[in-house]
Length: 227
Length: 227
Image (cartoon, rainbow over all chains, first blue to last red; front, top):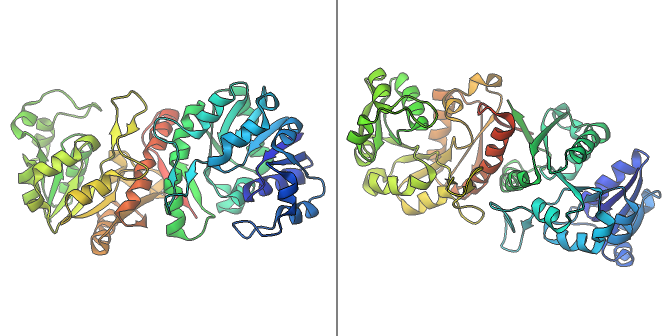
């Protein structure tokens, strides 16, 4: 399947690497491919610069946000929350129309110090903003509650006995994404919260996530909904 | 131990009943004890009116917020989030000074429809507001992430294999509350998030809680932090 990954930081690379390893045709989208390729410094989490990553994953393409979105039959938004709407605008509504857009971004605002606040919450969410800005896209919010490594390998923690959430307004798109989470990554417990407005719930969990990270000193944790 | 429970709704009654059953000397505090006692309608969750509850629990006293707070060596704030600061003001700073105040309240605002929004979040929290308003009290935020029945009987769900959070600025008060959670109620996994500002994390989990309740149609659930 042709897949677009918007965003070339740790989340984008981790997703791209895993999805390409399954045999899919992956293109990473970034604002300025030449500048991204020229960068030699490691990422914020000590992850290799994109050029090194691409050298190790020769099947993965790199293009502008628009080129990647045009390439993908399914589009992953793995940009930072504050840059998400702008990145998707550069991707272009025409390149998103009718497609499943998997939105992983969280509206984390680090500008006021740590732990970060949310730039939108309570009576709106980034998931809803994305859906409103691109009404032709089938936005499904998911994977935003875990670290990048857990996203694609939930089984590495407690044998995968924990919960992932999906929400979105299009039932078929949610079914597609739920299947992908299970078949591609190995998620076992995928809980459908409802429409895209339910993004408020999972995005507002992030303030607890960052505090749990502070308490546990290790990002390889998540929650299981015990019921 | 002498215990004050501020609030006579389902959470207050559930806590009072359990704590009194352990042999503690419990007084429930309410705004107008005579009016509360005269009410004959069941509570919002079909729970019996307080008069019926008190008739079944003759050892439990009823007083004003101030009388109850004066009685308690430990004070539970089990009022509704929007009424919490006013109830504690009526309880009186002098009756809270130096005491452990267990704050269970959530700033849920139902005035804008369902699911509720939060009246404070993101850059402040109700836990912090309570601590700032009563600097002499040792406020510990806990139990606000679960249904009343689970608060006092975590073992009834999955054998108690799930997580409760505590936060607060006073380490001794947190240790006291952690011991109480384990010894009185049977909580097994109590996770210390840090100071009272960490209330932002657990209160902002509530928007996910209400959506999970909507999806699961049953309030007897909670989360386990898998790590």
